[in-house]
Length: 270
Image (cartoon, rainbow, N blue to C red):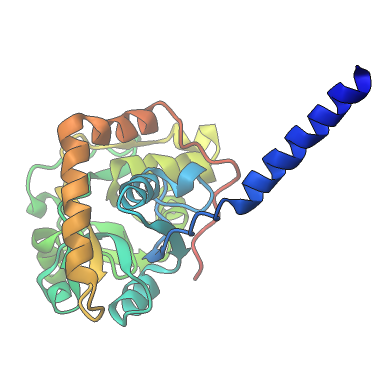
């Protein structure tokens, strides 16, 4: 009896293995490569799922049948190489008219709020740009703060010292080498948590009046012939996420800390 049971078991194992061998392997999903800059908590190779925006893009594209990989680069290079067609997209970017020559823009992917960070010891208030006249302000390399403030900076009424990272800008703020640093509110506080001590963070606050409420987008290069069709599919899927409430859940999860870094976030490459 035991021999019969052993034989039956062996036959079952052989049959199962044969069936598994006969089943064709599932084809690997086609890959989309998207160039991005380091911008925690929205985008970072050190965050879970590469950050909330990367997670959202990956899930959207997966439901359209694509596997997304993100190439983290300095922002100017991320733009230039995607514009040249090396990548199928780049994220996330503010719309500027001069970028229309290189890219198609998706439906809005991210709602941003830029504020002025400053030391608590500075009694700072503002209601119009001229309230900033004569101030020394930190800024990012090749970074736009919206057409209105960009134009005001160009007048020379404020001096903007541009460096390559949030850590450098906040370091200058703590040393009182600049008096203000404009940055997206979630990005600013993420940079503070990742680079500074609790005592240093306690010295910094932000003004409640937004400098800029901004929309950011996924850009697809006009140089690639498939961009228009891919954009339409992406936009339809994004709208379905918004309609179902699924879109908002990603940002609820962000506020609950579910994209927390698994390691210290380093300054982006110089």
